[in-house]
Image (cartoon, rainbow, N blue to C red; front, side, top):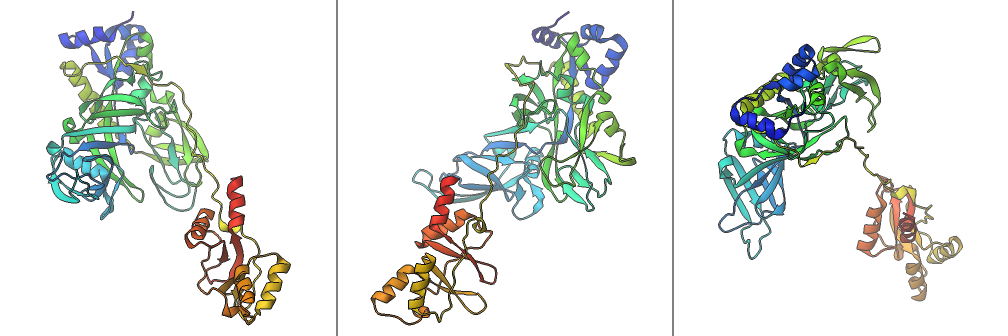
Length: 494
């Protein structure tokens, strides 16, 4: 037996639809079997509620009088991105307040707006003929905005890796506070009731799927960033003006930053037996890994593989010891999400949509491409130094014998006090000046540090129109010399 979304929507309109939560569906399939359950149940509602850092809101403020082209804009002292249009901006939930730091951020601004509070808008501009205003300070509420569209690039992880800490110090991370010496484990996600776990092949979850987003109707607009099934993610959007503060909460992760807890629910239409079976998934069938944040590298080592059933039990075993486990997601709120979505469908307030395109069932997350940053000490050559009492004639002989063009001048402690070039010496000889190099040396010397990027050294040479830089330590003792020829050869190979 197969159903269609159109048939299910007719049942919703007629008030005869059978809707159950993902929690209830497990029991129904266990009692009736997948085949009978698929005939009885039309829709299964799912839910998750947790920190979703990759979230934010596009806003249009409307034009001021006289108009302004916002170069930078702050909402309650939290900066939003303005490289879009004159009075459009995107506020990310993790952006921090410039005055309050980690105490307040973009998530708090968004929650304040949804709660009906006014926020201060402050903007500056360089001014143009059509946008002459250069500054504005005002107060706005959500109702004052022309549009406020929540667009979240990465939400609703299918599952997430748990975290622990093998080091001997407390770590403050996006996975919460991790105690030393495997003192605790934290995990995210709601396991068997989370949306993507109930349709793991993404048959009904795709671009165009209508979802429950923070109390309002929203839509899936694509795969989320870092989508790597079975660690799938979703990109979603919804109207902030229709959302409810009950289903969003700005939080601060101590020592890490601001994020936002969001409620997302997705209805799974039970089109056939396979989908009924998929929605019967249990926590002991959902696996993830505990990774060690005590090792500071991208590919952190796996401590052990676990199920969500183990994580939700409140304790796991690591190295023969029982370690307590705490969730970063709210199962209580996730249940409220799927129960509210069930109510909306039962009341005929929420209809299902057919995805216009499926999201990928496979993917690979590549690491950042990194090019080694070359520093000055990797290309500098040995410097031939002289003292300020060296004669110009002797300096000339050294330049010829050593085949160099630059002679750093140092005192008895090796500290740089000047520099002489082959041009300085040649000019002095031509003018009959055969005294000491202290008479012709350049005293204001542009230098480089050994750990300075070579691009910085190249910019200095260009800015000051010079062809070499003595490399010095913190006490201005000469360590070497880097020339424009050295940099040119390196950059050509690079």
